[in-house]
Amino acid sequence: MFRFLKDRFSKEKEEQPLTIRVEDVPGLLDAREAQIAADLAAGTGDHRNAVVTARIELRELVMDLRSKEREEAYHPKLEKIAKNTLPLFEKSMLSSLAKDLPSDPGEFYTAASECLKGCVKGLAGPGRYLKGVFPDEMKEIRQTVDRIGREVNAMTPAIAESRRKREQIDGLRKTTVSLAAAIASQKTAAHDLSVIRDDIAGEEQVIDDLATTLAAGEAAAASPEIADLEAAVSGLRGEVSAADRALRADLAVISHLLRKGEKVLQRGEGASAAREIEPVVDMLAGSALPAEDQLLTGLARALPLVRSMIGSGEIVLKNKEERELFSTGIDIMARIRALYAQHRDAEARLRAAEKAYAAHPVIEKTRRAEREKETREARLAALREKMAAVAEREQAQEAEIPVLMAGMEQEISAIEGRTVTLIRDDRA
Picture (cartoon, rainbow, N blue to C red):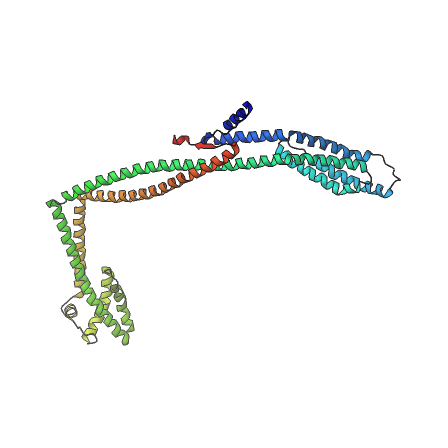
């Protein structure tokens, strides 16, 4: 009765759950691996000693074959076989027996297995021809080889179990590394998120401050002084537009008549003259205003040809704009030059007015605040994208860590023979 209670108490004590810190798992695995090595050494020690002893005996038996006396006249055919085969058998067996057996049980088992294979091969090869010559000796050699085989076979379960446990521990080590990496990555992501949130809060505060500055700037921009500057800029923009329209209107008329003249010359025998008009037509075909000097140089050659065709009736002026521009008293070159000058003057005065407007302290401060706000908003958007990516990474690690820990708990429980619970100190 008392013995039953004692056994039951011991069993319950062994099955008590074990709580292990994640940080202590590598040390636990080192201890279990050392225990596996110690158990294997103890469990195979007698067999290894027996293999060593049998190998020594087997080597002596093989080397003693040459010294055995036998009747040379008896069985001369077998004698010849022995003479030719014995050196091959000795070489095969001694070669297999010459390799040292390591002290590590696992390595010992591998080396002993290789030695055994070599000896069996030697017996099955040249050794089979020697049984008739050395029946007793070969029987003893075979029995010794069989002893080595039995001892090696006796080691196999322990070796297999040791390898299984070590593979289990190797797998756990890999999982431990993965878990440590996941925890480190999760911590890094959490830290990064904290920093990014602080950066976002800082950017939002700066943007709010800039919005206040811009609101104050808008109020200040309503002053009469700034209103006058804005009115001057607006008026000059109108002048530039008017000068541009006037210049383009005359150029459109000229371009239309030049194209007519080009067609007239191409139909007749004025191909060389048409080449004087063609470059000017190309210049006027674009959307941008042609360079003044280039245009006037081309017009100086092309306009006389057009006037000549108008005078001869080859070109007929069909609308008011054409008749006005190409009437006898109009100097087209001077008119175009004056329109370009008017356009340049309006543009120059507009740039000066815009510069004066932009240089006003209120406007300058407002534009600087606008640029800064745009930069900050772009940075804020980038920070929010980065925060989303880091948060996703942290969530992935948060999901992966429990899975890894659950798998490790099962594997360690299998090794320990009782329920194991893993805990993280960083979550305490």
